[in-house]
Image (tube, rainbow, N blue to C red; front, side, top):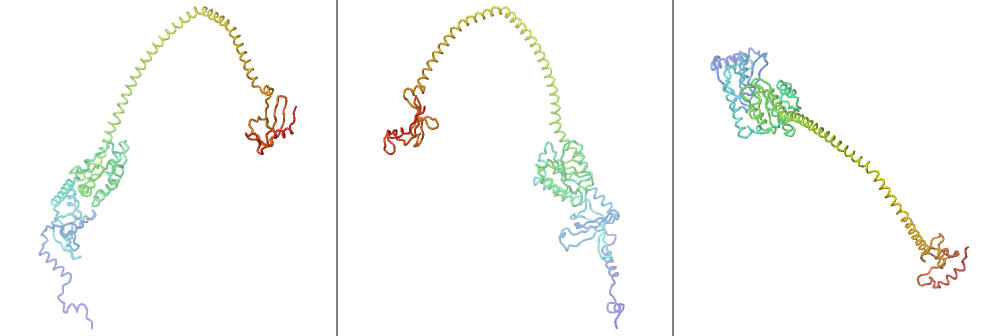
Length: 479
């Protein structure tokens, strides 16, 4: 017959503890070793921290030993900080510029706690040693500055020359925030043609250092040829809100920038490490924008406005001087012109009187000259005509000597081809060609039989006279 659970418990293991009894004994042992009123100081490295919303206001922290923080089997202490303690503590940390983050080593005071529903031993936070934490943060900041100085990065960006007219601006900011609007607003109302290349970045919280350094690197790609100046701005906030600008990634990115970096981080107290390594640090984004506008304004006034005003004054003075010189020159020219006109008028009058007196005499002399020349012209013309007639006679005689008709009368003849052209050489005539021989008293036609060479014979050896005899059989006389 089967036994029930009650019968089993009443048997061999009747003295077994219930869970409640077990936890009562554990809690009693803990309370004997760690009474409720006993407070403990615990040192550990923050592995995880999570603060609930303002409605509940609790904060939960996981602590591990700093020496075994990377060990997966490292013991973890669950720390709870209730709203009544966490509210004032959070305000104190914010005033000191501290934000609890993983990796921080903290010293806490509180009491041990046993949470029965989860059988979990925890720690109730009552106090945090802010002074020790500030000392470690200050030491880390000083160590970072010393390292940057040793590497020559502390003043590297400050040595870069800022252009006289920095109009191409690279801006690292969170768009839409007050700091962003303050800086951009100063540029917008300046009237100068600023060109702003925005690299958006988170400027608050645990992710801010990586976001800011990444935004700076994006602007580095543009280089000095694309940017005149890089500006990092962040509006006002608590020291904890501005802690990102003390981070090593941001400091190194600013120090190693190939372009001058100005900072306008909204705090008026201690400067951040980013301010220390920057080319120039302004206390607020508004002040940064105002300084940038003032730099361009100074250049504009010295290089454009002042020279333009001076040029305007000098131009007005030069125009007035030229006008005076022009008036004086015009007066001199008018007086000189009147003087010259008077002298010319007198000269014309004298010349007119002289011409009036000399005209009859000159006319008589001219008439006498014409008469004398006319008397010489007639004999010269007659002599010229006679000379021309003699030359004409001589030319006629010369032409008569070369007259064709006269040559024909002297016994010469002309041989013409069928086209009426004169035949001058034997090689121009071939066999069977019709020729016409002109005499003084008529024409004789003939047809060539053969032509001969220079030896007086034809190609067959027959004498030229035989060829001529045969040709005379074909002659006819034309009237």
